[in-house]
Length: 391
Image (cartoon, rainbow, N blue to C red; front, side, top):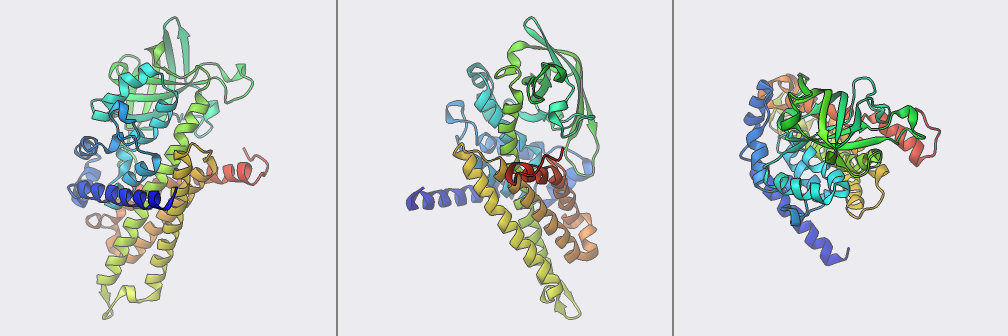
């Protein structure tokens, strides 16, 4: 990228940030606080994002989207979290695009992408994790058996967020039993399920109440029949397709963590400046200001890795290491900033009206999901440093 192009990109990104911030102003802290108390889905916010075209950022213009890259998508999600909101309510519509765009058939893209872009359809759910296999995706047990022009699905998924608020689901299944393949990564396939037709006809969705308002569920498949043309790409190649979505997911989650981190630091800085104890602002004390400053440094460093990974993804370069490291650094930085904010606020950090405790719970998730920090460290140890495989 030459100098002029770089300047233009910076200007476009700042314009994008400003526009997202303007939209988020209509959804203040009180909006998110009330939703959290009721464990309710932010339908009005998601509709506003959709109407403004932000959730169609990665959809090509020919299908009614903006045709932007993961870099721009990450900025959108970052600004949502930096405003005090929670992009987890809608971020799947960003990272599922990697699988559908790269591997979906022309017919699938023509049928679904324009409707996803306008909001007529929501693709907000990705079914991967299972109760007994967790992060060991190659051992998943949900089976889709081909019978004529249909697949018959049996199995169970867990921690599948937004299934109750989505029209479509990308579902990872086994189409060949693991004992019949040469490598565990073989025999996995991805199906694009229409939830409107599936629920009550072989699919049961059961909500799971968690410590944060994340609309997550269990899915039970009991001989669900779906058309064979729901298959995305080739049968048995689903693990490779899944990875395309996972790298985007890591980068976008990193951006959300950066947004959270900046929110915590901004709130902690403001409170430390305004709060007077012993006739002086508490932020004048190095014991208060140093942790805030250190957290800021770590958030900014994580942000650099986020942009490096995003730019590599948008150039179609291999970026598994960078995407994973970005997610690890950003999740750690946001969690550090969250703890610093609570410590700065003291007792008020636990009061709902200040929103710190809500954001504290929300950002804690990213130490565990969508991939735990331990698994990222195992990935780096093996694939970057060449150490023996640990699992």
